[in-house]
Length: 273
Image (cartoon, rainbow, N blue to C red; front, side):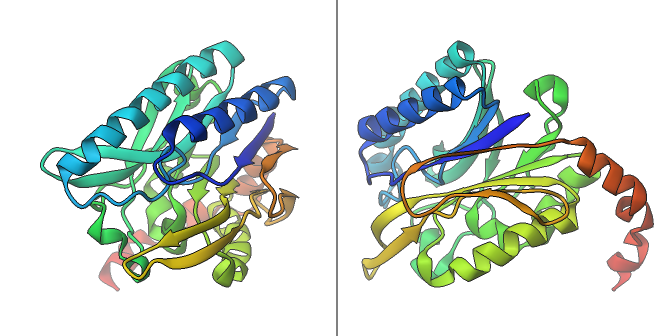
C-alpha cells in the first residue's frame, strides 16, 4: 500500500487558498496511486485566534465546507485523508479536531488532548478529554488505524487504548517548528518502535506568527513515513509537496508475533505504581 503526506504552509484564516493547495496535492497523490494522505495540523485555517465562540463560528463554518469538499474528493479520487481543523464546542472555545475522511465520511473525530502552553494554545482552544479511537479496517477500507495531533506525540499514553485495540497505523498532523525539529526526528521512530506500528506524520512548512507575543516560528516540514522497526522509509524537506512510501503491514504483524509486547504488559503493576 502506498501512503504519504502532503506538506504545505497553511495561511492563517485563508480557507479557500488552503483548500486549493490541498486539492492539488490530493489529485497528485491519487495520480501516484497513494491510498492515504496526511495533511498538516489546522490545515484549513492555521492557528487563527478564536477569542470567543462568536468570533470562531464564521471561520469554522467555512472550514466545515472545506472538509465537506475533501469528503467529496475521497470518493472521486479513492483515497483516505487525515488532518486537523477547528471544530465548534457549544459555548466553549473550539476543539483542534483530527478527522480521517474516507469514502465520503468523516471518521475518528479526535479532539487534541494536550494543548501546547508555551504558545498559549489553551487560550484559543478547548482540550479534548477522550483518547483517539482505533478505526477498524472495514471502516477505513485500509487497515486498523488511529491518530493524534502534534504535541500529543510527546505523550505515549495517548496511543495506548487504540494500540490495545489493534491499530497498525498512526497518523500525526503537526505544526512542529525548527527549534525543536530534533525532538520530532527522535520521537517519530520512537513512537513507531514502541507502538509496533507504522507512523505517517505530516508537518507544515513556511513561517507563522504564534502565541500572545506573536513569535515568528519557522516550520521545516520533514514529514515522514516510519516503519515499526524505526526505519524512516521516506522523509520530506522544507519545501511544500507530497511524499509517499510503499508499506507492508505484514512487517508490523510479524514483529508483534516475535516480540509480544501486548501480551507481556503488566497493567496490574502499572496501575499500582
